[in-house]
Image 1 (cartoon, rainbow, N blue to C red):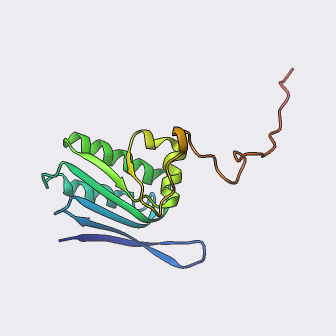
Image 2 (tube, helix red, strand yellow; image 1 turned 30 degrees about the vertical axis):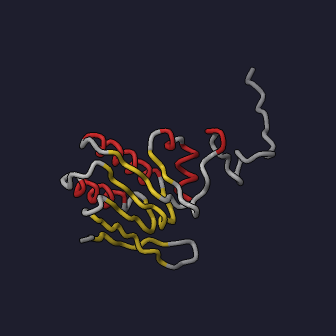
Length: 151
């Protein structure tokens, strides 16, 4: 039996993407959809505490439907990792959405979390190197100004 925690968050086009956490205690699995942010991260942690009593040695979080993730979402994943370890379990983040996978790689959490990408997710960084953003001041070829040292 699966249970859900839902709320809605805005998306850039003005529509609503519902946030949802589905819990499958029989398979020790969560599925997250929508915006995984400060307003919703606590729902994921509450759902994970429900897995603590299942007796499973492996917990899985399917994040294929996550459309946005902020620092609170990342913090929730790290907290989930530690919670699983305290219960003698491993946590696997399955099918990360492209936005979540990219963020995990950029901040280096791929060195902490067990990320299992699927065909629709961004591929792991080649050679263990982090990917650079395609836009913004860190992208390749962007001119960098030097600032003279003060007298």
